[in-house]
Length: 208
Image (tube, rainbow, N blue to C red; front, side, top):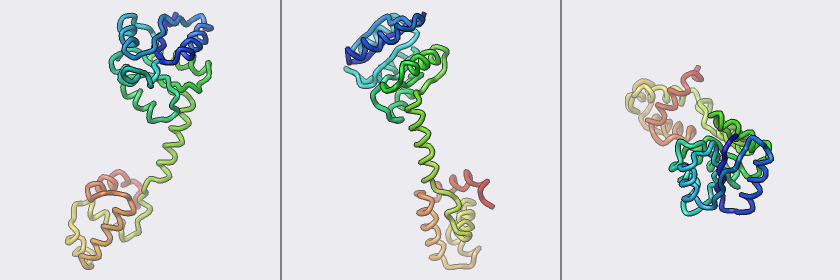
């Protein structure tokens, strides 16, 4: 029997979720509460197998409640279908995150995984994280944005050469190197030479 605590400030939602969970004979809802302080007290005293914790709850947030409950197995439960909330909840110590748009089957699946000690994120958040990752990859600066000359100068900078030294190596005016430096940082969306050195090291395998 998996013992569950539900912490949510909406009474109807708590009751409905409790009824849904208890359609599964493997689950027992041992307590329901409407505020985070009570939830922490119950979890520390009763040590349930799973706590379903809403983020938007008083007197302190579900994220803060999770920190006070750790190492209890908590699944964040929220109306917020945004990866940022899931990340904050997981960082605080939660082992799962389910939105209130999730199906009964997905909630059951999340509980089963977290009981096993695994992490679980509902499909709605996973889809958004995948899209976010793809978008970041598409907009991230790439070494291919640099011209051959800019790539050459970036290489010298990553080796620690000053603009004056690079100008001497390439036999061009110092001002020309400074213009190239500015354009390189602008194209790669980098703030300074230190950032450029790191970027060049990370992308070394893409430089031919």
